Image (cartoon, rainbow, N blue to C red; front, side):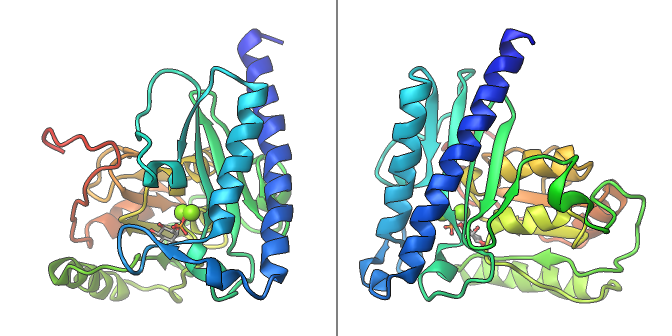
Length: 284
Ligand SMILES: O=P([O-])([O-])O[C@@H]1[C@H](O)[C@H](O)[C@@H](O)[C@H](O)[C@H]1O
Ligand SMILES: [Mg+2]
Ligand SMILES: [Mg+2]
């Protein structure tokens, strides 16, 4: 085994182990009737964080630091507390301790509370649906081949549901663009629309072939970093909502079963551009 393969395997093993520990913490919090009293807000009154999000992120960071002291981090709650959101060429763990906090708070569960993390540059990644106890780690096994054609199939009709999603928006112009895009795509033949309340789980649904498409603007790098690797490895397609190559810091993403489906939807979308996660403004 090469040195980089060893590091990849070590990182994957560690990510899986710490995701399982995080899952125990999340499930214990779900049993705790009082946890909604620990909810705070971040960038706006509808941007929620709980004590569990913060504790899980610290658990992951401390655990990874003790195993890989030189690795870097981009964590949702750390960035929210003022840490930089910068991707360098160093191995970097991109952490979303709970993806789907707005479901976690009122205990609307059903598999939408999860932990995702990824070690950028090694492509080690884990998306763990803590409530379902389902680990999305390997495109060759597990949930990806349970009788459904996975992403990457040649199916080009919308025979299944597809999942657009939007986080809360305060800007009426942006809301107009969201509804206009939705009106355009609803006129295409599809069997229905859904949203799990978790960007990462929506993308894993594309990877596993449960749905054909997911798109969203306003997500952050930690919402989609790990799941992007899962989609790619399952043979799916990732693009920017502009039709260009996906840029994880741009906060825009389309994940689809194949390029034909992605392109048909992109033609219907009205593009808007939230402030990038890395703060870069030059022409993007
Ligand atoms: O805040 P969080 O629960 O980690 O992540 C959110 C979820 O993925 C949600 O589905 C998506 O619509 C938001 O854009 C994300 O920010
Ligand atoms: Mg998230
Ligand atoms: Mg989160």
